[in-house]
Amino acid sequence: MADSHEFRRRILLLATTGGFTHAAPVLEIGAVLASRGHEVQFATCAGQEDWTANYPFIKTVYTVGPAASEDDLDVHYETMRLWRHEHGFGPMMRSKYFFDNFWTDTYKSLRSLCENDSTRPDFIVADFFADSAARDMFKQFNIQLASVWPQMPYAMAPVSYHPGQPGFQADGVLTSEHASLSSRFWNEFVVLAALPAIIPWLIWTKRMRVDAGVNYSHSLLSKPDYLVLVNSFWGLEAPKELPPLMAPVGPILSDEYLPLDDDLAQFLSNHDRTIYVCLGTHVNLPGEELEKYLLGFIQALDENSINGVIWSIPQKPRANFDTLKSYNLSDGSSISITGLLNDSHPRFRLPIFAPQRAILAHRHTVLFLTHGGGSSANETLFHGTPVLAIGYFFDQLCNSARLKAAGVGMSLDKSYLTPSSISSAIANIIKDEDGSFAMNVRRMQGIAVLNSKRKHAAADLIEEVMIDQELRFKKGVELRPMHLQTADMRMPIWKARNWDMWSISLTGLAVSGMKLCNATLFLPQYLQPAIT
Image 1: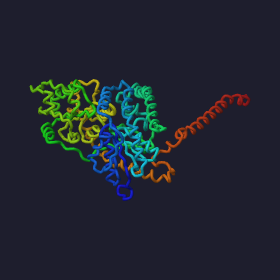
Image 2: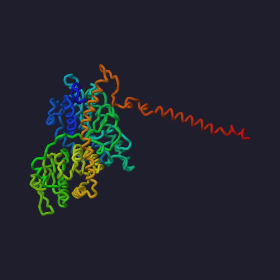
Image 3: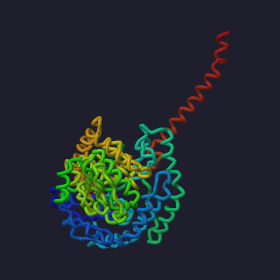
Image 4: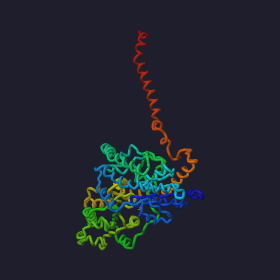
C-alpha cells in the first residue's frame, strides 16, 4: 500500500512508562508508516514529549497523564536490582502495580481522543506497557492496535517445549531440549507459586478499572485478536510456532545513529582492544559493586586482555564512587577515582552518555559488557560485537541467557560477581581459543542485519490489519471475522480440539471392544456342541 494515494490514515503511537527504550521501536515503526503517507501522532506522559525530537514527521503530541517521579523510579529500580530468581514472582508483581497504576490516566486520555471524530485515530501502535488502554479503545471504539513487545509475550502462544514463562525462567533455561527434569518442573512451579501474588493483583486491577467506569476485564488469550509485534528475532529468541497475528519484527533499529565525538574517536583509534561497558540508565550500583567492576577491568588491563575501557556511567551511579580511593596497575602507574571521572587516565573514558551504536560499530571495540537490555542485545548483534552480559532485572536476565545460548559471548550472575570472575570472562572471550565466539558473532550479525528490515514488514502488517478492519464491517456490523485470526479462537474449545470426535470415537471403540470381549467369552460354549 506504500504507493497508494488513497490509503492514508491517522495512526497514534503510544508509549508511556519504561523510558525511551520502550518508545524507540514504536517511533521507528511510526517512521516507516509516515514515509508511506500516513499521519502519525504520538501520545506519552508529561515531560516525555521531547522523545519525538528526532522524528520530525510527528506534528501532534498528546499528553496522557503525569510521568513517574524520579524518586519513585529510583525506589522501584533499586528493588528490582536486588531481586534474584529464588525470590520468585512476588517482588516482580510490585513492578506490575507500579506501571499498571498509570492505566487510569492513559485510559481516560485515550477515550477522550477517541470520542472526538477530529482526533480519533484509525489505528494505535502501543508499547506493551500501555497496551491495556489501547485494547480498551479496540473494545469500545473498534480501533485496532499493534502491541510492541521486546520479547515473546507472557502466556501467549505457549508451547510444551518452552518451560515457564518468557523472561521468567528460573535458571535461564530457554527450551526443554537440554533442560533437566528438575529444571522443567521448577520453571513450571514458579508460575504456580506466583498465584498468591497474582490473584491480589487481578483483584486490584479489576477494582481500578471499575473505579474508572470500565466494568469488564481483558481476557487472557493464548492467541491475540490484535497484532503483537515482537522486537526480536529467531536466533536471539528460541523459535516456536506463532499464530498469524504475532510476528517477530526485530531488531527494530534506527537507520541513523549518533557519531563518535572527537575524544572517543581518538581514544578508540589509539586502543585496539577496547571494552565498552554500559549497564543502562536504571541500574544504580552502590560503590562496592562499582569497585568490583573497576578492579575486574584493572585485572584485565594487567593481563593485557584489553588495553582500553569506555565505561558509560550516568550521573547517579557516578556519585557512588569513593573519590578518595586510588588503585595501582602492574606497570607501576596508579588510577585515582577522581582522575577516572575526569577522563585524565589514558586507558579509561567514563562518559555520562556514550554514542553506543557508533562505539559498537568501531573495529577496535572488542567486547561489550552489557546489562542485556533489549536494545543493547539487538545493537550488539547487529554491529557484530562479542558480549559479556550481566542482567539485573526483567528481560535483561533472560536476554543474558539468550546471548550466551547464541554463542556470542558469556553471562555472569549479578549475585556472585567478583573482580576475578569479570576479568576471567573478559580474557576467555577475547582469547576465543577455539574461534567459536567470533564465528557465532558473524553468524548472528548476518541474521540480525537481514532481520532489521522487518520493521517494514511490521508496517505492512499494520496496513493489512487496517484494511481488513475497515472493510469487514458495515454500519458497525461485523460481516466476517479477522482474516489473520485462526478459526479456533472463535470456536468452543471442545470443537476446536475435536473433543467431540474423540469422545464419539473412543466411545465407539469402547463399545466395540466390550462386544468383542463378550463374544470371545461366550464363543466356546457355542462351539462346544459342534466339537463333540
